Length: 185
Image 1 (spheres, rainbow, N blue to C red):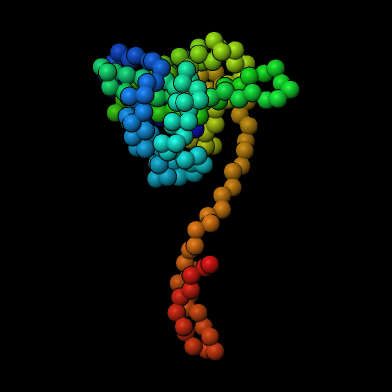
Image 2 (cartoon, rainbow, N blue to C red; image 1 turned 90 degrees about the horizontal axis):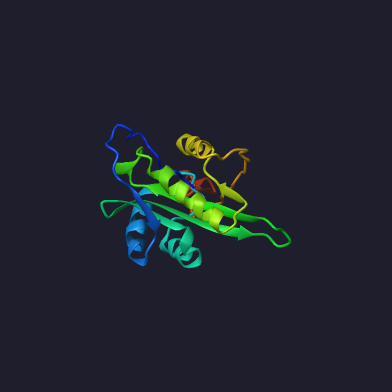
C-alpha cells in the first residue's frame, strides 16, 4: 500500500470534499491509480493495480471506498476492506490503496481521506486497522505514523519470475563449436 503525500507542500490548499465513491468515479480512480502504482514508480509493489481489484473493492465494501474532490475533480482515493477471522471477536480494517494525484500531493488530502475512512471503520465496529507499505517507502511510513499507526511488523515477500528469459549472452559450445544463444525453457 502506498501513501502518496508528496513534496508539493508549497502549493495552495484547496477545499477538499471526501465522499463515498460512486460508479461514475471508477474510470477516473482507475486511471489515477494507473499513474501512481506502476512498477516504475513502485518497483517492489507486490499487489497489482488493475480494474478487477478496484471493482472488487467497490462491489464488496462500497462504504470503504472513498474519493477526495476539489471543485468536482477526483484528486485522491482510499480503498479498504474488512477482515473477520473465525473464532475471533475482533474485526480488522485493512487500508489497501491510498492515492493522491501528484498535482495535489502535500495538501493534506491523504489525511482527510484517512480521517474519513477511520470514522467509517469505527461505525462498522472495526477493532484494529491494518496497512502495509514497502519498508523503503519513507514518506508512507511517516504519513502512517502521523495517522497513529505503530508497532511495525516486518514481512518478507519473495517473488519468482516464471516468464522465460534469455540466458546471459553466453554462446553455447558444442564439441568445441559455438552454436548460438539459448532460451531458458
